[in-house]
Image 1 (cartoon, helix red, strand yellow):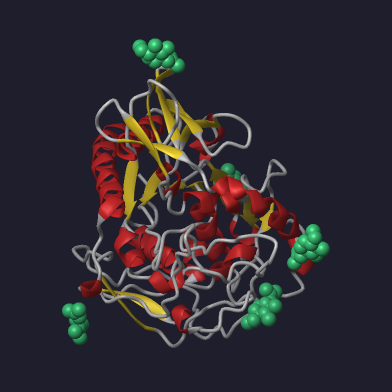
Image 2: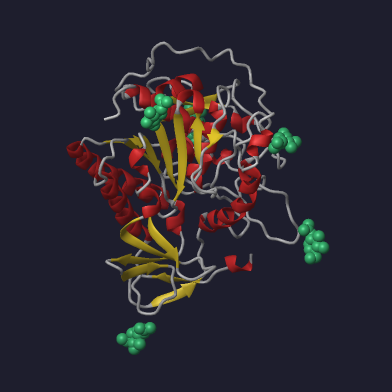
Length: 422
Ligand SMILES: *[C@@H]1O[C@H](CO)[C@@H](O)[C@H](O)[C@H]1NC(C)=O
Ligand SMILES: *[C@@H]1O[C@H](CO)[C@@H](O)[C@H](O)[C@H]1NC(C)=O
Ligand SMILES: *[C@@H]1O[C@H](CO)[C@@H](O)[C@H](O)[C@H]1NC(C)=O
Ligand SMILES: *[C@@H]1O[C@H](CO)[C@@H](O)[C@H](O)[C@H]1NC(C)=O
Ligand SMILES: *[C@@H]1O[C@H](CO)[C@@H](O)[C@H](O)[C@H]1NC(C)=O
C-alpha cells in the first residue's frame, strides 16, 4: 500500500509547476476498493448457495398496490428537507440480505452503533414515502434498469436488491463473469437490473500498469456501457470521486492538459474542466443513441465526509448522527461538481426533449451531505497489522442512508406517471 503515498504535480496557474503531496480524497480509496472487490465478488457469486437465508422481515406495511398514488404534490421539491427519526428502519439486515458488499457490511465488521440506520428523509413541503418494493416491482414489470458509474452505483444497486428482497430475490443472468457488469433478473416481474462499471464515464485507461494516473478521453464514449444501454428503460448515471485523482485529459486523441500528473510541458487543467466535458460527452452519447427510448436519471455527486485529517492522514468519519440542514453547507469541490452536473443536465434535458428522451435529476447531494454518520469508516474490514488500511468515508453502510435513494427513485417514477417513460 506504499504506492498510496504518491507524489503528484499540482499546477498553479502559471506554466511553472511545483511538486507537492496532495490529498486525493476518496479517490484512492475507490481504487483500493476496486481491487479488493474482486475477492469479495467471488464470494458474492456463490450467492445462490446463500439463498437458504430467505427469512423475511415483518411485512405488515406492504400491501399489493392497486394504483400508484404519489403523496407529494408536483410542486414539492423532494430533495430539500431534513433527516427525521424512523424507528421502523432498517427494512433489511445483513442476515436477511446476502447482497451487501463486504466493505459496506458495517455491522459484520463491528460497528457498535445502530442509530445511523434509523432515519428517513422528510422533504420540507411533503412526505417522501418509504420505498415499497411491491409497488416498485409492479411499476418495473417487463422493464429494465441500468446503474452506470463507479462503485457508488453498485452500492446503490445492492441497497435496492436488499430492499426488494422482501418480495423477491433476483437470479444472476450476467452475460459475462465480471463483478463490474452484473445483470439480475426478477423472474416474476420480468424485470432486469444491471450495473456497468465506468468510473470516468468516458473512455479511460490507466496510463501504465499499476498506475494511479489515468488517461481520460474526454470526447470519447465509453463503449463498454454506451453500446449496452439502448435496450434499457431506465438508466441511472453517476460519477465524481474518480475525477479527484490524477488524470491526463485527451481531446481528439491529443493531450490537452492534466491534473496531478508529473508530465513535462503538459498544462494543468483542473478536474472541473474534465468533469464538465465528461458529462457533456455522456449526455451527447445518450441523446445520439439510435433506438434508445429510455429515461435517464442523473444521480448527483455523493459527498465524502473525512474529518480530523485527510484520507491518508488519519481522516475519519466517526459521527453517529446526521447533521441538521443548518449545521453544514455544500462547499468546495462538492459544491462545484454538483453545480457542473446541474448545468450539464439542463443542457442535456433540453436536447433530450427534441429527441423525445426524458432526463430526470435524482438530486441526492444535499441529503447525503447531511449524513457524515453513514459511512463504513473503519468498519469495512478487519484490522490487519501488516497493512495500513484507510477509513472509508466515501461509500455507505448497508443498511444505511443510501436506502433512501430508492425512496426518491420510486417517488420520481410515480410523479412522472407509471406508464409514460417518454
Ligand atoms: C451480521 O452482523 C453481525 C453483527 O451484527 C455479525 O455478527 C454477523 O457476522 C454478520 N453476518 C453476516 C452474514 O454478515
Ligand atoms: C420481458 O421483458 C422484455 C423487455 O424487457 C420483453 O422484451 C419480453 O417480451 C418480456 N417477456 C415476457 C415473457 O413478458
Ligand atoms: C519541454 O519543453 C522544452 C522547451 O520547449 C523542451 O526543451 C523539452 O524537450 C520539452 N520536454 C518534453 C518532454 O517534451
Ligand atoms: C439548527 O436548527 C435547529 C432547529 O431545527 C436549532 O435547534 C439549532 O439550534 C440550529 N443550529 C444552528 C447551528 O443554527
Ligand atoms: C503478518 O505477516 C506475517 C509475516 O509475513 C504473517 O506471519 C502474519 O500472519 C501476518 N498477519 C496478519 C494478521 O495477516
